[in-house]
Figure 1 (cartoon, one colour):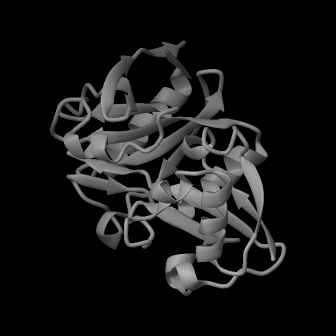
Figure 2 (cartoon, chains in turn yellow, brown; figure 1 turned 90 degrees about the vertical axis):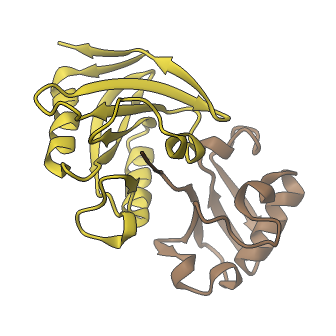
Length: 138
Length: 92
């Protein structure tokens, strides 16, 4: 289970809405399955400023900096999130093929209905998907 | 040259859960070979069969991406900090 305070959950959703109609992405840091910080990342796919509606790639230098920040704060990268702008919150084949972090929960936010974003969590280990409960703490 | 190598979480099982290891190497290629010697199978995770760095693996020397330096041939200096960071990417 991944627990996320409602304020941080909202930050994650806001970031996804801000990047719409492109896919958004970000990192959740914390400890023991509890999110303590949301890193809103750039979608650097294709090197364009505003990313893509069908792909996301975190900017690699930004990713290095976030990794360093998480280490300095003695936290862990416990979640990786991205949005699906027109499809269900379920990992695509590309998501599965490129899931290199088996210890993180992959959170997918569907903006199929932008008035009602839906977030779901998964572990992806050696291309096997297991749902992981997301609990929003009020 | 003694360099510090930051190991990403997904590869720490191979380095006996160490997040950081030191390595004696003059280039990135030598560093990868050295890591392979210490931790068999490590190179496979970073490189394709022809020895080229996998597309979704980023290696930084301090804050410089080796792709913008001389790639795997980039020289290392004593005290350099090397970070290995698998990319985070996906899509529909």
